[in-house]
Amino acid sequence: MCGRFSLTTEEQQLNEFFRLAGGKAPYVPRYNGAPTQQLPVITDQLPEQLQLFRWGLIPFWSKQVPRNTPIINARAEGITEKPAFRQIFKNKRCLVPADGFYEWVRQGSKIPYRFTMKDDSLFAMAGLWDSWKGENEHVIHSFTIITTDPNELMRPIHDRMPVILDKSSYETWLGKSDEDALKSLLKPYPADSMKLHRVSEEINSVKNEGPGLLIPKSEMDLFS
Image (cartoon, rainbow, N blue to C red; front, side):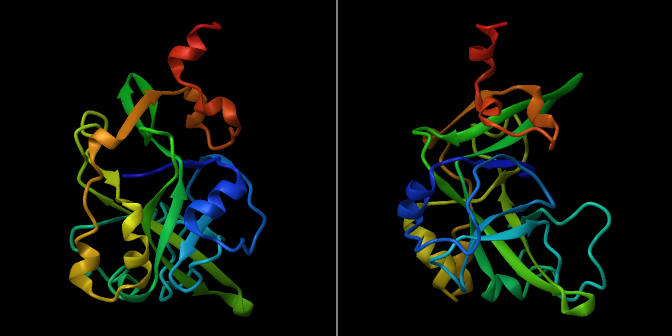
């Protein structure tokens, strides 16, 4: 699965990488992006703008905002058959910009690891989004991140990983309507293009933010 991620780059670099004209909301770096928070996405309807959507999909047909575990992930397998994803896979896809994501190993306590590109560059996870209208016409835009089988780097840590799209496929993901072409993108990212390192257990709390969360545990030990 994917339960936390970061997006910490400078706004100018972000705009250049994704060819954005500017965001609809102020850009704020996030070191510990978590479910139910408002986090950046790039949708198929506004591909040149960064928008803030709620992480945790609320299907348009839901009677209320879920009170329990939100739909933060969508399994790639069978995604075109499941009611929550079937229709929006056709016409409500998004990129979820990131520069890292986190996963945990349980060894008595939860030990966090951060996964990044080998060169620490930006990347985009494949997502789906929807709009839900509540009382008084209040609208909530929300999204979920698609997951797939783990690659060789991820497998010792977890049995799922987010679908990371190759940069050359961004336009296809946001613009194509051919279902087979889209589904072919939902595969594990090459392990040899990624790396991981252990980080502080402070990442475990969604209350914690800041650049210190990204420091590799081995470097932190030098100052302890």
